Image (cartoon, rainbow over all chains, first blue to last red; front, side):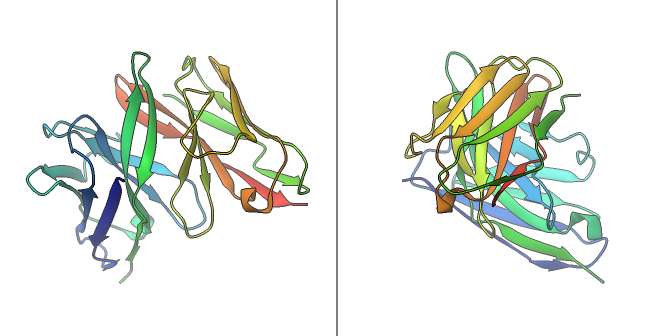
Length: 122
Length: 109
């Protein structure tokens, strides 16, 4: 059974860099998109970006200038870095696996991490 | 830019009743739409993908329908564990962009 375990610093000061890692257990790393999603307190879900095993990435244009997603296939892990954080980046951050239904290319996220609460405060 | 609009924002339903949730896409997405359930303090859980296919382990009382720009999630007979927030989701593979709807909260009437 596939499991995602995520970790990282939970309290940051404005202008610091958020850093989170998600480890994939019980499944091959290849053949999927590995995504980061966040949810500000009391609000909806926002996609941050994704990576595949080759290292190719896609980012939400609204965050692209500050986001870096990387992969370490030897450890079955992928990571998120978000620079120059502000209070607006306070949120629960989730990692997730995205699959697609062939041959239709219908996409869906079927496995999620438990979430990491990140608070940005001076 | 794709916009996913969910309605209503809040739905008050009595246990055992039927709940109908709507998701509208600003442009056609074919059947490339998924639904998720989220309970307080938990990660979202996949319910439906491909607009109408239930994910593994999802009870038959959950059903999805629609294509193009109009989609519906129906819960045929609400159980106590179904009171939650529901999100629709579309991923466009070019240019790559994943969009969530704003969510519908299903609460006890």
